[in-house]
Length: 141
Ligand SMILES: CC(C)(COP(=O)(O)OP(=O)(O)OC[C@H]1O[C@@H](n2cnc3c(N)ncnc32)[C@H](O)[C@@H]1OP(=O)(O)O)[C@@H](O)C(=O)NCCC(=O)NCCS
Image 1 (cartoon, rainbow, N blue to C red):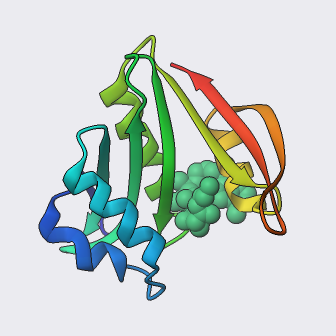
Image 2 (image 1 turned 135 degrees about the vertical axis):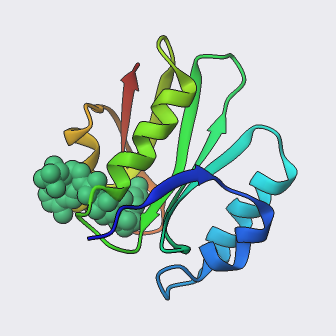
C-alpha cells in the first residue's frame, strides 16, 4: 500500500473530507465549519495520492492541558491511518497534555482502537442521546 501523509486541515478540504468515505453527514460538515471559524477547533487529515483517507477533529478546551477529541474517521480501516492521525495530535499537544473523548458503548472497533493507543476508560453516560450510551476515555500524555 502506498504511504499516506498527515497534514493540517484547510478550508478548501471541506467538501472532500465531508464526502471522503461516501457517507457525508451534516454533523461532520458542522464540525468542520467550527474548525474554519473557531480558534479552539482544529483538525488534521490523512491523504494518499491526493485523496483524503482520514481526518481527526479536536477541541482545545482552553486550560492548556485538556483537549477533547470530537471525531475521527478513516476511509480505509486497519491501515494505520487512525493511529497516525492520533499520533499527530499527541505530538502537537505534547507532554503534559490530556485528551478526553466519548464513544458509543456498541462501537467495538473504536473502543479497541482507543484502548490499543493507551486510553483508559474513565466514565459512562447513560442515555447520552436517544438509544445511545457513551463510555468516556482519557489519556495523559
Ligand atoms: C476507529 C477508527 C478511526 C480506527 O482507525 P484505523 O485506521 O482503522 O485504526 P488503525 O489501523 O490505526 O489501528 C490501530 C490499532 O487499533 C486497534 N484496532 C483498530 N481497529 C480494530 C478493530 N476493528 N478490531 C480490533 N482492534 C482494532 C488495533 O490494535 C490496531 O493495530 P493493528 O492493526 O496493528 O492490530 C476506524 O475504525 C473508523 O474510522 N471507524 C468509524 C468511525 C468511528 O467509529 N470513529 C470513532 C468515533 S468515537
